[in-house]
Length: 182
Image (cartoon, rainbow, N blue to C red):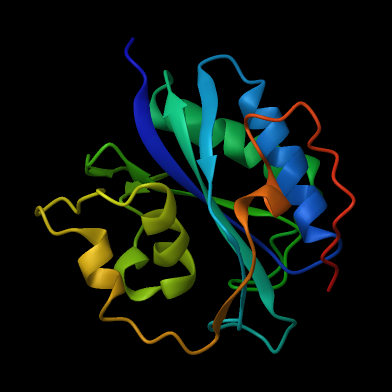
């Protein structure tokens, strides 16, 4: 199977979120059929919907994937479980949220997975890091995500660090001492 590009969004607002991101990306990079290509900057974002809660940290990762979308989704969900994610309420606080945002310009809709991710074009906290790691990515109808991003308000989204703060796929030292706790 030829590796396809896919983008996964990372989010969290409970505990040491950057450490959770780093562990998840290290695990992804060590998964057969998955390779981390690049990581976006780290964002701090105001919560959207749900209960009153702390701000989120968000990022995205571009992967080269030799798995089927459902197989990658299973890997992502296992990493969330390993990070002790609790799904107590919709849009609630979480230690780690891994969303499959985009897959090689393909559209898919099953009971378990919709690609591109629903609401992607309305959520700057997801779209901005996606455009950073996949600037030429297109929607199913051929629009550039970068063009859509330029129409979204920037309030509530702040870049707080470069990609190396999260994970550097070219480095052998991704233990990092940086910490982002909520």
